[in-house]
Image (cartoon, rainbow, N blue to C red; front, side):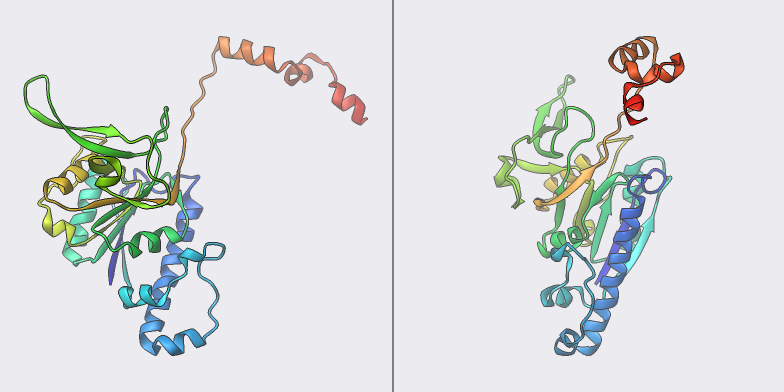
Length: 277
């Protein structure tokens, strides 16, 4: 099986996620090695060897016979289009490369997402055209990035597609249209699709002027009858960005709430330090 790992990132992994992403690459590398050994020596001989776990503390990330049978001798292509400016353009270029390589599967995740090793096999095991892991918007108010596609009329009288957020979703299961009361769409923070989808849907697959390429992709799938799913049992974490701007009002309020923090500037010894001495 040919697997493309796509990196549609602004400038590489977020500093808070880098180590975990590298660790996931190592997991995939070991999974590839095991798949080759399994196919070379056969099922019975493979399980006679006392291999160490490749996904400690995450048993769903351990491959099974069924996984190895579908993976075959796993080939992995890393397609890095970081620094492409627009993630939508990067996703498009990744898919073009995957199609040219005749990839069987494509997996992508955003640079500020965390997930367990098992996310790969859990999504892969569903064996569906397109599937996303459960993710949430980093901006407030926080919400699942699960939507339904709704037809609407623009102010100019043109037909258009809008998204309605699904706040209350079925938990810990694979969900699709019938579970959310409409054509399902999702954010592509962590998702996987079969390579054949790129042959079913004409370009562009991901079109965007800065954001919304994931919804565009889902509407194209909907238009060409490609089934989409979200696995709400495959959890992720999305980094929340909270810049703080310090001005005079903030300074005065902070000093009011934390007076002891300024004692050393005023030559006042903290009561806590006195007790310790």
